[in-house]
Length: 449
Ligand code: ADP
Image 1 (cartoon, rainbow, N blue to C red):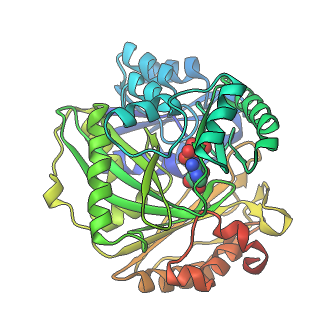
Image 2: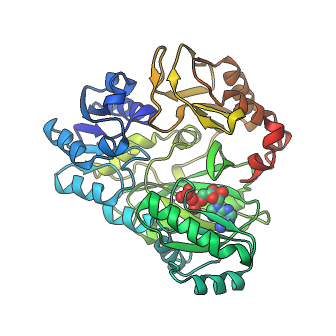
């Protein structure tokens, strides 16, 4: 069994992991940058080690310092959270070489799925439907343009090493192709150190529906149903819900089975997410696999009753899965709103500042994941997500009503947030009816604001 975990992250996810460890009787070590000396995760962990200056490359991305902290404090495992080093194959391998169990899949798996063009190829081989597009990477502009002609415009250019919506360009017509290709590729080169691109048909106004997977070291794989993450801005998720109001039971079953097939085909281990886009006719296509815990994991925990962080730790400790597919039942409805430090009226400009007054809602049907407290100084250096408000009820209507009530109660003074924007989104008729797609927010920004 695992006895001491280093939490290689910050913010609400670090707090979430520390809490799960405590409940399992596992000791925790937090790491922090000099900007995070006062952070909640540092206060909640049993021990804390400073790993460098505020810039991520000096601290939360600093492999040497993090591994040293783990070794010096005698950790036998490490949880990477999301973002930062969570999808860094080399980091996972170094952990294992140092005798520290990486709570996640193997480095090899992270590398395979992190190359999204390669992942596409593997999924094609496994019989998983993918969006029509290039076989693998495209390195030749001419060839890419021929392919785009063949599959028909619009197409979407994507960075093989991409993530967070970067290195992606939608191309509506041939004349725009060359410019888009060169700019996306150089953006990818800058962001990921790899400018290789691949190409997909651009599916207009799809839904983004993803399946949560759990796989143990013995080849057992289950899926925990889906999350609908269609409410996005600039390809980034804003609000998520489970189950999806778009899927009927037949589609849910088919997509779940395909997600399990996909995880089995690559011999996946630990928690993972298979992301699909679904067109208006209900055709679904694999777009990528995420090899980490996701921001939106709590909504799945609520509708399945399974603690995903604890499941990850148990899988890493080589325990077999405690559940079979037939034991998993989706009950009720859950919604998550991401509360960001940003100003929706200034084009969602991120901001920093001191939390002068804070009231986080509670009551029946509300779960809060946050690392905020009164007088906490939100540093300007990191992701703008401050907290997650998750609500749940027997029905979607109830979960929405509780979310409105909860957002109405929130007080976060001293810093701009998107709380009102989220509240407005809940009032949109299309949202209430469950009829929205990935470009809904962008198309309706004016009215939502
Ligand atoms: P990232 O890893 O950068 O998040 P993804 O491949 O997961 O990139 O895609 C992010 C979002 O971009 C999807 O949720 C969807 O909204 C949109 N998208 C991706 N591929 C397509 C496509 N082929 N057609 C239409 N939209 C797409």
